[in-house]
Length: 256
Image 1 (cartoon, rainbow, N blue to C red):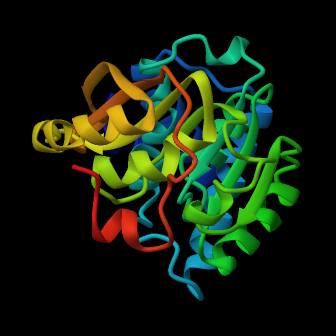
Image 2: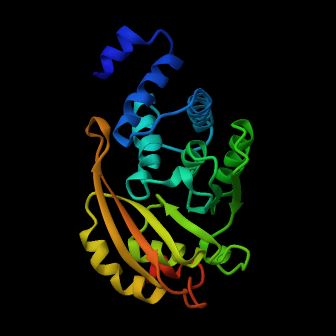
């Protein structure tokens, strides 16, 4: 079904259009939403666009683009971990920004327990407000830098899964993220389709930090909205206590 057919022939309201496109787009992931989840996603979309008028949360504002590039992209993690709905894992989202992928994941999989971390307090305030509006009791929002929070024993190596859509090279992102997951846990960075150079350059960093690449999952977003890649990285031993290094160093001097 083409987008214009849904718009003209099926949907009578914006809310109906949204629901139809969410259902259509999620077919690529074999996911289905309950009525409550559809309502939560629509409310999140509305609130995101409204808040974006006064605060820079996203450059993607057209409804269909938000559905595909934010919501579907966030939920595409099922391509790497197919049984997430059966888990009761602790998950941390590093550099969550406006709440991606954490909020869509929290809506989709209420059994999971989420910590969403960002260095900008205004974003964390938005996420806290949004979690309350959407009645998402499985979200904790934390204002911090990864370099600082990873030194806190309440967070260090306490998570089953770490996810991140943050824009950083894989070496840097691994230093931010691997300290948060316990041995045998999983780190999944969301990347664009071109990752070969990053993967090569990150081999030493992964080895130092206790991780090893387990799988690479390549796919295309619906409607030819881009090539994407999920890296599945397993934690095979504890991260040395000196990592992450002090604020700014992981980005300025990546481990290579």
